[in-house]
Image (cartoon, rainbow, N blue to C red; front, side):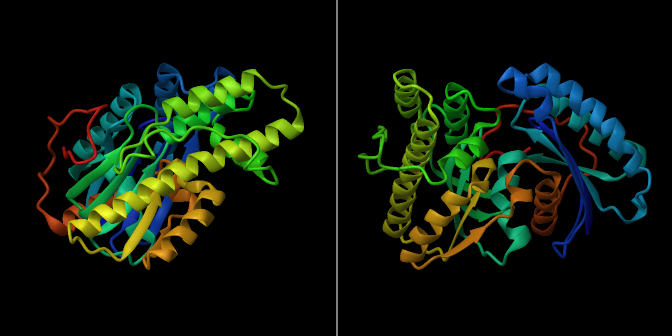
Length: 338
Protein backbone atom coordinates (compact mmCIF):
# COMPACT_ATOMS: atom_id res chain seq x y z
CA UNK A 1 0.00 0.00 0.00
CA UNK A 2 1.10 3.53 -0.80
CA UNK A 3 -0.64 6.62 0.62
CA UNK A 4 -0.41 10.26 -0.41
CA UNK A 5 -0.98 12.36 2.72
CA UNK A 6 -1.68 16.04 3.48
CA UNK A 7 -1.35 17.89 6.81
CA UNK A 8 -2.59 21.46 7.38
CA UNK A 9 -4.04 21.65 10.89
CA UNK A 10 -2.03 24.60 12.23
CA UNK A 11 1.10 26.34 10.92
CA UNK A 12 2.81 23.52 9.00
CA UNK A 13 1.88 22.61 5.44
CA UNK A 14 3.06 19.10 4.66
CA UNK A 15 2.75 16.47 1.93
CA UNK A 16 4.12 12.93 2.09
CA UNK A 17 4.03 9.56 0.38
CA UNK A 18 4.19 6.68 2.85
CA UNK A 19 4.44 2.94 2.14
CA UNK A 20 3.15 0.05 4.22
CA UNK A 21 6.75 -1.15 4.75
CA UNK A 22 7.22 2.05 6.84
CA UNK A 23 9.35 3.76 4.22
CA UNK A 24 8.64 7.45 3.63
CA UNK A 25 9.10 7.91 -0.10
CA UNK A 26 8.53 11.66 -0.04
CA UNK A 27 8.10 14.24 2.71
CA UNK A 28 8.09 18.00 2.43
CA UNK A 29 7.00 20.22 5.29
CA UNK A 30 6.96 24.01 5.08
CA UNK A 31 6.61 25.92 8.33
CA UNK A 32 4.88 29.30 8.55
CA UNK A 33 6.75 30.53 11.63
CA UNK A 34 8.38 33.47 9.88
CA UNK A 35 4.89 34.82 9.11
CA UNK A 36 3.69 34.49 12.72
CA UNK A 37 6.87 35.20 14.70
CA UNK A 38 6.44 38.98 14.88
CA UNK A 39 2.78 38.53 15.86
CA UNK A 40 3.64 36.35 18.86
CA UNK A 41 1.60 33.35 17.74
CA UNK A 42 -0.43 31.76 14.98
CA UNK A 43 -3.06 33.97 13.34
CA UNK A 44 -5.68 31.56 11.89
CA UNK A 45 -6.59 33.69 8.85
CA UNK A 46 -2.94 34.19 7.89
CA UNK A 47 -2.23 30.48 8.41
CA UNK A 48 -5.12 29.51 6.11
CA UNK A 49 -3.82 31.78 3.33
CA UNK A 50 -0.33 30.34 3.71
CA UNK A 51 -1.66 26.78 3.45
CA UNK A 52 -3.47 27.72 0.25
CA UNK A 53 -0.39 29.29 -1.33
CA UNK A 54 2.00 26.53 -0.23
CA UNK A 55 -0.27 23.69 -1.34
CA UNK A 56 -0.54 25.38 -4.71
CA UNK A 57 3.27 25.33 -4.91
CA UNK A 58 3.56 21.74 -3.68
CA UNK A 59 1.00 20.69 -6.28
CA UNK A 60 3.78 20.98 -8.86
CA UNK A 61 5.55 18.11 -7.09
CA UNK A 62 2.34 16.10 -7.04
CA UNK A 63 2.08 16.27 -10.84
CA UNK A 64 5.17 14.03 -11.04
CA UNK A 65 3.53 11.27 -8.94
CA UNK A 66 2.41 8.03 -10.57
CA UNK A 67 -1.14 7.93 -9.19
CA UNK A 68 -1.75 4.42 -10.51
CA UNK A 69 0.38 3.23 -7.57
CA UNK A 70 -1.39 5.34 -4.92
CA UNK A 71 -3.81 3.28 -2.79
CA UNK A 72 -5.41 6.19 -0.95
CA UNK A 73 -5.27 9.92 -0.27
CA UNK A 74 -5.30 10.87 3.41
CA UNK A 75 -5.66 14.30 5.00
CA UNK A 76 -6.07 15.84 8.43
CA UNK A 77 -9.74 16.68 8.98
CA UNK A 78 -9.31 17.71 12.64
CA UNK A 79 -8.68 18.86 15.22
CA UNK A 80 -7.01 22.15 14.39
CA UNK A 81 -7.64 25.62 12.99
CA UNK A 82 -10.75 25.48 10.82
CA UNK A 83 -9.27 27.56 7.99
CA UNK A 84 -6.27 25.29 7.55
CA UNK A 85 -8.43 22.17 7.87
CA UNK A 86 -10.77 23.40 5.13
CA UNK A 87 -7.85 24.15 2.78
CA UNK A 88 -6.17 20.77 3.29
CA UNK A 89 -9.31 18.64 3.28
CA UNK A 90 -10.70 20.40 0.19
CA UNK A 91 -7.41 19.88 -1.63
CA UNK A 92 -7.50 16.18 -0.72
CA UNK A 93 -11.14 15.81 -1.79
CA UNK A 94 -10.45 17.44 -5.15
CA UNK A 95 -7.42 15.24 -5.74
CA UNK A 96 -9.34 12.12 -4.70
CA UNK A 97 -12.23 12.96 -7.01
CA UNK A 98 -10.06 13.82 -10.01
CA UNK A 99 -7.91 10.68 -9.66
CA UNK A 100 -10.72 8.36 -8.48
CA UNK A 101 -8.70 7.26 -5.43
CA UNK A 102 -10.22 6.56 -2.01
CA UNK A 103 -10.19 9.42 0.51
CA UNK A 104 -9.33 8.76 4.18
CA UNK A 105 -10.02 11.55 6.71
CA UNK A 106 -7.59 11.44 9.64
CA UNK A 107 -7.78 12.53 13.28
CA UNK A 108 -4.58 14.53 13.75
CA UNK A 109 -4.19 13.47 17.41
CA UNK A 110 -4.49 9.78 16.60
CA UNK A 111 -1.84 10.23 13.91
CA UNK A 112 0.56 11.66 16.51
CA UNK A 113 -0.18 8.76 18.85
CA UNK A 114 0.46 6.17 16.12
CA UNK A 115 3.60 7.88 14.79
CA UNK A 116 6.00 5.86 17.02
CA UNK A 117 4.97 2.74 15.07
CA UNK A 118 6.28 4.29 11.85
CA UNK A 119 9.85 4.30 13.17
CA UNK A 120 9.99 1.52 15.78
CA UNK A 121 8.74 -1.97 16.63
CA UNK A 122 6.49 -0.72 19.41
CA UNK A 123 3.57 -3.10 19.97
CA UNK A 124 -0.02 -2.61 21.10
CA UNK A 125 -1.02 -1.79 23.72
CA UNK A 126 1.39 0.98 24.73
CA UNK A 127 1.33 4.12 26.84
CA UNK A 128 1.94 7.40 25.04
CA UNK A 129 2.37 10.96 26.28
CA UNK A 130 0.97 13.43 23.76
CA UNK A 131 2.44 16.83 24.54
CA UNK A 132 2.13 19.76 22.15
CA UNK A 133 1.00 23.35 21.76
CA UNK A 134 -2.64 22.34 21.79
CA UNK A 135 -2.75 19.14 23.81
CA UNK A 136 -1.32 17.35 26.80
CA UNK A 137 -2.64 13.86 27.49
CA UNK A 138 -1.66 10.38 28.60
CA UNK A 139 -3.22 7.81 26.30
CA UNK A 140 -3.36 4.02 26.24
CA UNK A 141 -3.09 3.11 22.56
CA UNK A 142 -4.75 -0.32 22.22
CA UNK A 143 -4.94 -0.46 18.42
CA UNK A 144 -5.41 1.95 15.46
CA UNK A 145 -9.06 2.54 16.33
CA UNK A 146 -9.04 2.27 20.12
CA UNK A 147 -7.53 5.10 22.18
CA UNK A 148 -8.22 5.43 25.90
CA UNK A 149 -7.37 8.80 27.46
CA UNK A 150 -6.15 8.21 31.02
CA UNK A 151 -5.83 11.92 31.70
CA UNK A 152 -5.54 15.25 29.91
CA UNK A 153 -5.10 18.91 30.70
CA UNK A 154 -7.92 20.70 32.46
CA UNK A 155 -6.79 24.08 31.11
CA UNK A 156 -3.59 25.03 29.24
CA UNK A 157 -1.38 22.54 27.42
CA UNK A 158 2.32 22.21 28.24
CA UNK A 159 3.26 23.65 24.87
CA UNK A 160 0.97 26.64 25.31
CA UNK A 161 2.50 27.24 28.74
CA UNK A 162 5.96 27.29 27.16
CA UNK A 163 4.84 29.75 24.48
CA UNK A 164 3.16 32.18 26.91
CA UNK A 165 6.11 32.16 29.32
CA UNK A 166 8.56 32.61 26.45
CA UNK A 167 6.57 35.64 25.32
CA UNK A 168 6.77 37.03 28.86
CA UNK A 169 10.54 36.59 28.73
CA UNK A 170 10.67 38.50 25.45
CA UNK A 171 11.67 35.43 23.44
CA UNK A 172 10.53 34.37 19.98
CA UNK A 173 7.75 32.07 18.82
CA UNK A 174 7.48 29.13 19.29
CA UNK A 175 8.69 29.39 22.87
CA UNK A 176 9.74 25.82 23.62
CA UNK A 177 12.97 25.74 21.59
CA UNK A 178 13.96 29.20 22.87
CA UNK A 179 13.51 28.23 26.52
CA UNK A 180 15.33 24.93 25.96
CA UNK A 181 18.28 26.81 24.44
CA UNK A 182 18.47 29.31 27.31
CA UNK A 183 18.07 26.60 29.98
CA UNK A 184 21.37 24.93 29.09
CA UNK A 185 23.71 25.50 32.03
CA UNK A 186 21.01 27.20 34.11
CA UNK A 187 20.22 26.48 37.76
CA UNK A 188 17.07 24.33 37.92
CA UNK A 189 16.70 24.95 41.67
CA UNK A 190 16.91 28.76 41.73
CA UNK A 191 13.18 29.38 41.24
CA UNK A 192 10.54 27.30 42.98
CA UNK A 193 7.37 27.20 40.91
CA UNK A 194 4.02 25.50 41.65
CA UNK A 195 3.12 22.08 40.25
CA UNK A 196 -0.72 22.06 40.14
CA UNK A 197 -2.61 18.78 40.64
CA UNK A 198 0.56 16.79 41.35
CA UNK A 199 -0.59 15.97 44.87
CA UNK A 200 -3.66 14.27 43.43
CA UNK A 201 -3.25 10.63 42.55
CA UNK A 202 -4.72 10.95 39.07
CA UNK A 203 -3.55 11.53 35.48
CA UNK A 204 -5.03 15.00 34.95
CA UNK A 205 -2.78 17.96 34.12
CA UNK A 206 -3.04 21.68 34.87
CA UNK A 207 -0.60 24.30 33.65
CA UNK A 208 -2.59 27.52 34.09
CA UNK A 209 -1.42 28.14 37.67
CA UNK A 210 2.20 27.42 36.74
CA UNK A 211 1.94 29.83 33.80
CA UNK A 212 0.53 32.60 36.00
CA UNK A 213 3.18 32.09 38.71
CA UNK A 214 5.93 32.09 36.08
CA UNK A 215 4.69 35.34 34.52
CA UNK A 216 4.46 36.97 37.97
CA UNK A 217 8.05 35.93 38.72
CA UNK A 218 9.22 37.36 35.40
CA UNK A 219 7.49 40.68 36.16
CA UNK A 220 9.34 40.97 39.50
CA UNK A 221 12.84 40.44 38.10
CA UNK A 222 15.19 42.17 35.72
CA UNK A 223 15.80 40.14 32.57
CA UNK A 224 19.54 39.73 32.97
CA UNK A 225 21.34 36.93 31.15
CA UNK A 226 21.71 34.99 34.40
CA UNK A 227 18.03 35.43 35.24
CA UNK A 228 16.94 34.25 31.79
CA UNK A 229 19.21 31.22 31.98
CA UNK A 230 18.27 30.19 35.53
CA UNK A 231 14.58 30.93 35.16
CA UNK A 232 14.34 29.01 31.88
CA UNK A 233 16.06 26.02 33.50
CA UNK A 234 13.80 26.15 36.58
CA UNK A 235 10.63 26.56 34.54
CA UNK A 236 11.49 23.78 32.07
CA UNK A 237 12.41 21.44 34.92
CA UNK A 238 9.13 22.17 36.73
CA UNK A 239 7.01 21.43 33.65
CA UNK A 240 8.77 18.13 33.12
CA UNK A 241 8.50 17.14 36.79
CA UNK A 242 4.73 17.55 36.42
CA UNK A 243 4.78 15.28 33.36
CA UNK A 244 6.91 12.70 35.18
CA UNK A 245 4.58 12.56 38.19
CA UNK A 246 1.54 12.04 35.98
CA UNK A 247 3.31 9.36 33.93
CA UNK A 248 4.03 7.44 37.13
CA UNK A 249 0.38 7.80 38.13
CA UNK A 250 -0.73 6.41 34.76
CA UNK A 251 1.59 3.41 35.05
CA UNK A 252 0.19 2.68 38.53
CA UNK A 253 -3.35 2.97 37.15
CA UNK A 254 -2.64 0.45 34.38
CA UNK A 255 -1.08 -1.93 36.88
CA UNK A 256 -4.12 -1.60 39.14
CA UNK A 257 -6.38 -2.45 36.19
CA UNK A 258 -4.13 -5.42 35.26
CA UNK A 259 -3.35 -3.91 31.87
CA UNK A 260 0.10 -5.05 30.81
CA UNK A 261 2.25 -2.81 28.64
CA UNK A 262 5.88 -3.16 27.58
CA UNK A 263 6.37 0.12 25.77
CA UNK A 264 6.20 3.86 26.36
CA UNK A 265 6.51 6.68 23.86
CA UNK A 266 6.14 10.42 23.63
CA UNK A 267 4.80 12.40 20.69
CA UNK A 268 3.86 15.96 19.72
CA UNK A 269 5.89 19.13 19.29
CA UNK A 270 7.21 19.28 22.87
CA UNK A 271 8.58 15.74 22.40
CA UNK A 272 11.41 17.37 20.41
CA UNK A 273 12.86 18.72 23.68
CA UNK A 274 16.16 16.91 24.38
CA UNK A 275 16.07 17.57 28.13
CA UNK A 276 12.59 16.03 28.38
CA UNK A 277 13.65 12.93 26.46
CA UNK A 278 16.75 12.45 28.58
CA UNK A 279 14.81 12.71 31.83
CA UNK A 280 11.96 10.48 30.65
CA UNK A 281 14.34 7.78 29.43
CA UNK A 282 15.78 7.62 32.94
CA UNK A 283 12.31 7.45 34.47
CA UNK A 284 10.93 4.80 32.10
CA UNK A 285 13.99 2.58 32.51
CA UNK A 286 13.21 2.29 36.24
CA UNK A 287 9.79 0.87 35.31
CA UNK A 288 11.33 -1.76 33.01
CA UNK A 289 9.53 -0.41 29.95
CA UNK A 290 11.03 0.17 26.51
CA UNK A 291 11.28 3.85 25.65
CA UNK A 292 10.54 4.86 22.06
CA UNK A 293 11.68 8.30 20.98
CA UNK A 294 10.06 9.80 17.88
CA UNK A 295 12.55 11.61 15.60
CA UNK A 296 12.33 15.40 15.34
CA UNK A 297 10.78 15.25 11.87
CA UNK A 298 7.80 13.35 13.30
CA UNK A 299 7.42 15.36 16.53
CA UNK A 300 6.11 18.48 14.84
CA UNK A 301 3.08 18.37 12.53
CA UNK A 302 3.85 16.37 9.39
CA UNK A 303 2.11 14.44 6.63
CA UNK A 304 4.15 11.25 7.15
CA UNK A 305 2.23 10.43 10.32
CA UNK A 306 -1.06 11.15 8.52
CA UNK A 307 -0.14 8.69 5.79
CA UNK A 308 0.93 6.05 8.30
CA UNK A 309 -2.34 6.45 10.21
CA UNK A 310 -4.23 5.75 6.98
CA UNK A 311 -2.15 2.61 6.38
CA UNK A 312 -2.88 1.39 9.92
CA UNK A 313 -6.59 1.94 9.21
CA UNK A 314 -6.50 0.04 5.93
CA UNK A 315 -4.78 -2.89 7.60
CA UNK A 316 -7.46 -3.23 10.26
CA UNK A 317 -10.79 -2.21 8.75
CA UNK A 318 -12.64 -1.44 5.55
CA UNK A 319 -12.54 2.20 4.46
CA UNK A 320 -15.49 3.85 2.75
CA UNK A 321 -14.62 4.73 -0.81
CA UNK A 322 -14.66 8.46 -1.52
CA UNK A 323 -16.85 9.67 1.34
CA UNK A 324 -17.05 13.31 0.25
CA UNK A 325 -19.73 14.18 2.82
CA UNK A 326 -17.24 14.13 5.70
CA UNK A 327 -16.45 17.61 7.00
CA UNK A 328 -13.50 19.03 8.95
CA UNK A 329 -13.98 18.96 12.73
CA UNK A 330 -11.77 21.47 14.58
CA UNK A 331 -12.69 20.09 18.02
CA UNK A 332 -12.74 16.33 17.47
CA UNK A 333 -11.50 14.39 20.51
CA UNK A 334 -8.67 11.86 20.74
CA UNK A 335 -10.91 8.77 20.77
CA UNK A 336 -13.28 9.93 18.01
CA UNK A 337 -13.14 8.83 14.37
CA UNK A 338 -14.43 10.37 11.14
